[in-house]
Image 1 (spheres, rainbow, N blue to C red):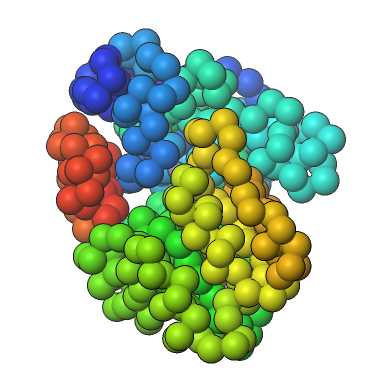
Image 2 (cartoon, rainbow, N blue to C red):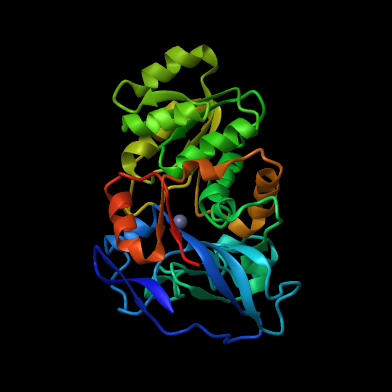
Amino acid sequence: VQAATLPAVGHVEVREVPDPSLAEDEDAIVRVTKSAICGSDLHVYHGHFGEFAPTYPIGHEYVGVVEAVGGRVGDLHAGMRVAGSFFAACGVCGFCRRGRFSLCRDVKVFGFGPRFGELPGTQAEYVRVPKAAVNLLPLPDEVSDVQGLFLGDALTTAAFGVRRAEVAPGMNVAVVGLGPVGLLAVMVALAAGAARVLAFDLVPERLRQAEALGAVPVLADAAAVKAARSLLGEQGVDAVVEAVGRRESLHLAFQLAGGFATVASLGVFVEPEIPLFLARGFAKGTTLRVGMANIQAEWQWVRDLVAVGRLHPERLVSHTLPLSAASEGYRLFAERQATKVVLEVG
Ligand SMILES: [Zn+2]
Ligand SMILES: [Zn+2]
């Protein structure tokens, strides 16, 4: 099968790789119809997760059709249209049994290489999905393939952040970082009844996109906190979603938090330590939450909101390319010329 691979850091190449096959009773083989490029794929692209074998497929956001199933996959059957979680959880460990799939003792991320379980990625014509009943989500006719593509990671991650920030109707919400996940968090916060969503970034084009989705754009420069204060007055920010994962963005999120606000951070932090001014957090009663999205616990309600037309993640797609042009897609995304790149696989 054809798949996007990473024979060298910063160099994506589509080539023939071995066919995936059913290895366990709980596996499914999915014929991938579309796979997207995610911000965390750039960690792979830039070599942050080490070097990969030349025939190892990369990518982790996908939608497709079940091609074949093992004997123990619940209600799944060949021909079903499905979205897949970006990571595979085992479904049976203590964490999975309590619905904490992102903490699974045997968690594996598709396309992230040997450090993350060596599960072959999804920017490929076919992919093997372990524990398929846990890690695949059936799609109703109302959810298009492009919409489904957002359910296994970006949109559900944003929704997880909005829930973890305890956004409630009437609240003032801040979203820091307007990559795809940040823009989707704007969308979800508004759907959740936020009164105002302030959207922070340094890139003017991203601010324009957030504004088009209904947010109030604010340049994330040294005057950002002041600007928020003058926009919101005494009430301030009730909930913050941080969608970058760097020192500067976490500091801004922490400063923006008003009294008893919750900051939910979705960014993938690679810095070992980030100092925080906790005396300020103490004075404001700030709650800080970090962590990887618990996709399989959240994606049903997110899918249902998409199905009834309350969320439109497809509005973020800026480029649609064939799988054979994956290298170009990564380049566009890495150079920030694209908001969201969709690879048409089959
Ligand atoms: Zn991702
Ligand atoms: Zn588990």
